[in-house]
Length: 564
Image (cartoon, rainbow, N blue to C red):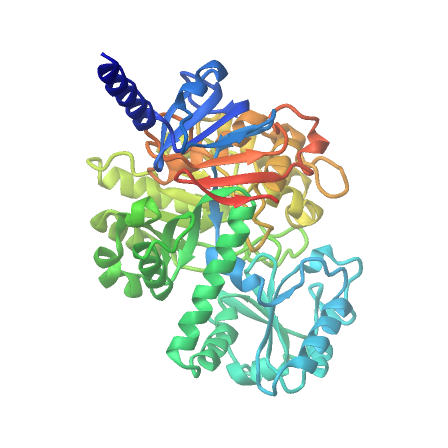
């Protein structure tokens, strides 16, 4: 009898251990985004999946001797943040160059380059990013369109080519040595979709707008290509590791990468197969139609490496950025009446990309910021959808959708087009938006989240990093307050509710990637991607959102970041 009791006891212990979770999170608020159970007291994880959610009183039964337990102590747990549009390797590269985001004057930038030149070898390129002429406290003198001339930068680094990318990524400033390397002279014609800004005498100023940047970036890549292939790949892997560390520290469990070339996708795939990706990547392939067409079937992959890598979208550019006056507008810029911006890729080429995407089972993601660019993109999508009525639920995307004509706003919801937007762009760009567009156009369609949501569109959220810091919390704050650094609200009638903002950074982004059945909410069976925050950003006073920290980032039930 005693032997039977012992056997039954051991069997019950084994059963309990088999049913116990590998991870339990409890004793706080858990915002699940599950309509059937919006709030929970605990979440239990087995392996890389959520096993159960429920009231606090049921948590104990999931805890066994091998269970890791995270006591929230009143903190907030949410579905892992999904970065909806940013540039993954750009985040790592940014950390390896000059950070110019805080520069208040052109002189500060010249001084930073001069310091870097003292440490650089002759001929070595000096790179940086983040400057924005509209955010300087005074305009440089002399200037053309508010941009400096290259003389001071050339004097600061006479032996080194310098390439400084605009915060938007849609313009760059170079010195004389870089122009020499790129073959840019007063006789160099503007490339299609780009502009070499020149002074009144016809001399290049150093500013390269939109596609003209490629003249300098190609020269930089030619210089880099002289290094051994193994050294270049090691650097790329280091860049990826830097990006992973940065994103995980900010609570990001999935990242929608807004355009990587095939060579970078090769490294992503190798790392996924070797289980070296610590967060999940959803990748848009960048490149021309001619480059991508023969490669699409080979590169398309869904859920490689235990759902750590998906490649199933094509990225193309209809126009540039508002800050550099490269956004393509229906009417001229208010502060540059002779310009309506730039069309970077002919609409006919984007229409061909659309047909290519359909043929190979890819989503199409088109960068469109100006109202003309958005209209042209929506027109192409509508034409393709009508020509292929058999193709349903394509979830094609417009990346940014920043400035819209009022008549085009309802078309996103009507066509099922995702508006992949960036909340923080509105508050970061606020100082110059009205200058560029005028008050009426800005009020009618600039950063119009509320109008898009109310019209039935699915709005995703992201940072466009390294244009902005890859912080979901700073972006969440901008989305729900529309307040900039000066505390002033920029068209506050367009702000999101806190629940909408959280959804835009989780479930909506999962939906925009066809991944809503895997992630975006905390439900049994879904991937255990969870972010723990120090405060409840859904209820705290808004000023406390920016001082909230990420305490845990959990990917597939594994703690990948823990604040010490």
